[in-house]
Image 1 (tube, rainbow, N blue to C red):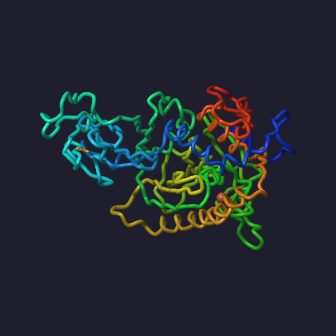
Image 2: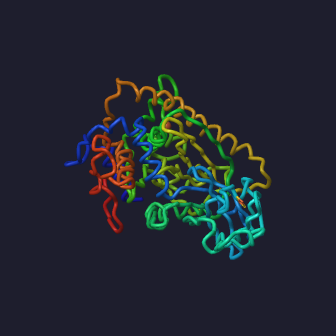
Image 3: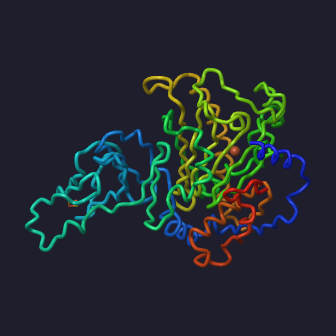
Length: 422
Ligand code: FES
Ligand SMILES: [Fe+2]
């Protein structure tokens, strides 16, 4: 916290980027509008990364499952008799029917409805085949459901289709360490929202990777003169593997409204009326703090609960943006208490301001008037995202005119480093 406070002071005081900071070339427009680039992402990025599939408490008992299709191929996530959670392609090894058809359910075995091939819930092993005598030379061992990577962190279930992928911890490690105190295990889903936005998925994600736009789009009062955050003090932490952190201090008026002397008066502020995640540090309580888990999950964290924003490309120019609120649930039943309804409504207003801005961008990016995207120093988390996209796809696989230069490695916070990258 002290280190980051120092970084914020430095950000306020600076008259330009730090000495020697690289000049970015324009981000090529093709990365948002070129079908070949989208195809590269589809074939070489989305099937190699860890993505959020759901929550472990939704499948508490052996045999409980939910389906997950957001990556494209249908997937089923199931808790085995050993209570481990695993993920399989939801594709029958007979003639390819989906094995499980409902979004959520419970079963002793996974039985395909078409001809009744049956798989166990532990390893997806084919355990029975009706009229097996009619198959010549069928080897059951060769016909298990395809298993894919599945790991649970603090109740969140992530899946990864790449058998050679690093573990979830190897990939997200430093961010997960810093988010540990959110005690995800004890949180529950408060509400889920979803919106389809007519633009490339990166346009949507990038809107949450900087606060340069904040006072222009989210300004309140006459002429947008009042804002909650002071973007001039925002500090960006570039974490390994395209992940990142952004800590933005409160504006003078927001600090005063919270009862702080100024932006740096970080204390253990508890929002009245909300159940509190007591382990959350004072910085998270007294700033806008957000993490990005590459490629498609961004979360503005907080002590009374917070949303995960998840970006799913439906096609090159259509994205589904989900936001799911998690909180310590101190009420019974599904009805959301008034205080939370209000909080969500306020958040949704900001989301709507972002959506209205993003939607017209795709057509304008496709226009001949669009020649390249210059990125500034305080937008460097966007560059960091693009660099990792290229590394994941494989730099040599990307046509030269569509690549971004690999520039930010010296600025990535490495394990054990004491000084943050600016
Ligand atoms: S397709 Fe599943 S049993 Fe035939
Ligand atoms: Fe925004």
